Figure 1: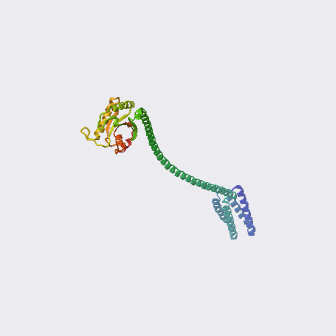
Figure 2: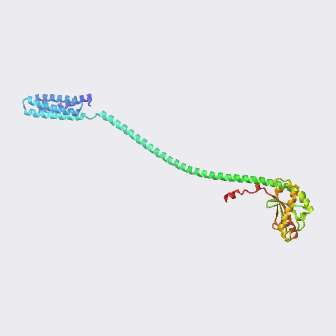
Length: 354
């Protein structure tokens, strides 16, 4: 739409164009010229009163042609005047159409406003692109951090599994160690108990040890009270001598005071063979002597359920049988302190494995 000021300016432009034409064509300045000028002014007014320039230009051109045609019929025909009139009207129409088409575009102010708005939008677009690039870089950075964290979590997960496996293994080892420690502590207590018993027995047998009637020694981790055969028996016999009975009574008094302990009475001989109707070999002789001592101890107060008898013949010598002194040491009665079952090693694991 043309503003009021633009329309006024356009009127002045049309006037200047008309005057210029009149100056350049002096032949137009005659009575018919004023008629034609009036037609041109009416055309200009028609152009200024329209709201749509392109459409109204077409209408005005059509109405102008109708008026010129009607004027031709109303006035006397004049060929030169008609030709000149047509020339002027054509020129005026061209000028009006040019002016109308020039005034249909936007004004400089509107162009400046649009240009400023385009520049502002371009700046906003550049800013948006910069922000988009910054955000894309941030996204890449976050993705890298996420990948690193994922890798660390995966590594930590593997480490946790390894640590759990190690922890389970350590707990198992700790349990075995604690169990072994408890067993060792129990064995230590038992060993301390046995040691105390040994010391007690030695103290009680001290007088007999000093008199040479017996001796105490440790064999195969067992305490053994050893009585020579010469004090207890005559050669080749199983009956106790009076001196032997006296010695065994003293031994029975000591053994009866030791609670919760079992004893094995074992007979031993030298390697000289015996062949009699009663003792075909040293096995029968050694076993018979063991049974004789066992019965005598029971008769003198030692509980029978804590005693047992055995014969080993000449299989466990304590000295060489090449000399009389060695053979005398091998002919003996041993009272062995039998370990309790709870003092024996725990073999349950071997049974479960089989």
